[in-house]
Length: 640
Image (cartoon, rainbow, N blue to C red; front, side, top):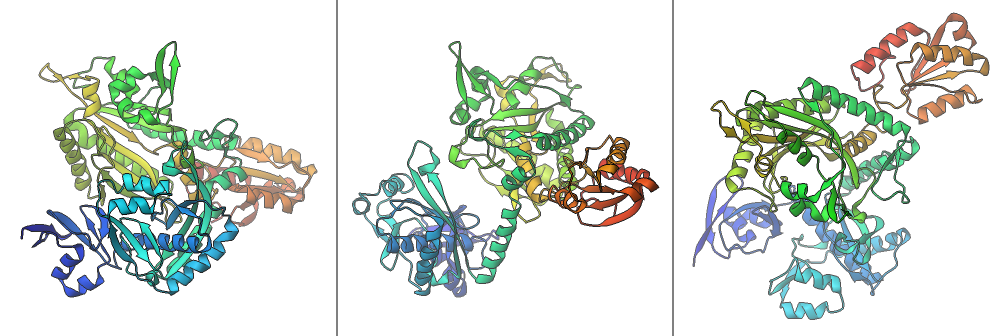
């Protein structure tokens, strides 16, 4: 019998018989680990503990203490939902039900469900969990499985895609229910300590809008009730901060079906925030030696073919015919910047050459995936591209990262860093990719930055360092990036003259400090719960006259701080109602002025934390808020 080598997370190696399962390997390590094994991660892929190993692999044993355990548990919870659904609605047809980061979903058809039905389905699911049914992995011939699902086109599609070439085919069975599935799963339904169905939506099969529309039921599961309660509380807070809700309440943006899905319209309040964000980024760019450029919204597709975007992005591009020539709305700004660089002659002394642009780009996401500002068709990248000599890479990447960390610090956001390596769909030689990835690892290691490796998540033209925002609720969002590109300079034949008077190839860095304005604005709305820092707030001060007799004084005060965004509340409301409205609008500061204030030439200052101070000299207030604005402090602090 032949043997294989299994490499464990600590780097140690174990020699086992070829065909040993993940569980067999765990028992080789120790009987306790063998008994505790739930699943395994083989070469980065989560698999069933009964999966046989036929070649040398990297292996992680998954137990209840592993990060991957919840994903396995939630996969089993999806099957519990499907079993409960078919008990109550025998005609329901199952499509696909994967685990997610927060729970699971299952797409179904053949049944008319609404949110009121979830309670009955959940009760039936609880009975299944209480019954503690064994979850068994079974195998059947491909022919038998095809016959079993003859009337279910979705399962047949899965059979011909995810399970293509498998014979026998894996299914999982619990009680009377079984489902076509590659696993892994927990040993029994009773291991699901807490189960909840959350909501219903619609979804296209495979996410393609030309396919059938299915009903998607979302749920979640945990090993214990306490974890479930914590999650539901976080979810409740997240719903309160939902940027789509706050965007409407605070008159920041809208997305109208008449103008088109995924095409946000920024109202005056939203535009004021965007302008401040743009000015902040512009100042950082200018201080770092970047030059502003601007490129059009569309180019001939010859440019996208030259850059490699056409072959890699064509399905996500908006294409149009102009006088029998094909043009495309730009999905990226980089080919335009590369073209600008190519139209001048450069010496080694000129590099690095740095360009920046708030560039609008367009990507044809599936309509079912569009959501508020988080996923749109049209968005703006605070884009920058740097053309450097190879010996300048480390210093230039460090400069970019310094500014990215300045963004995190300014907005009181925590960061997670990851190195994203070569994806399956990519351009360039192995040598180029290995060199690029090595350069970025070197930068991260030299700075002592903790980072994860996201295998296969790089851009098609090069690896990248990705930064994720963590907001006030602990949720993570994709954000800034710096990407190293040896490929586009090759495709555009970019050169500079070296010290030796010969042509040399520059390296191209792609970077964004926010990622995109849309995604970043979404993060800020939810992170601050609409309570933007003074410098960013669309309305910074609201003056509340106690009566119409104080309107003149209110407007004189407004003129004294006309370098701020100030409004006078001139509606004939009670002062209590004016204060309440200003709080609802999340205005950082309110100045309340009545007869006493007008007579003394002072103001009463109130902030959105409901703190108040009377008899404040206007000059003192104005001096403080200018400092607060210019230093970009996160919270109003005049009344601290």
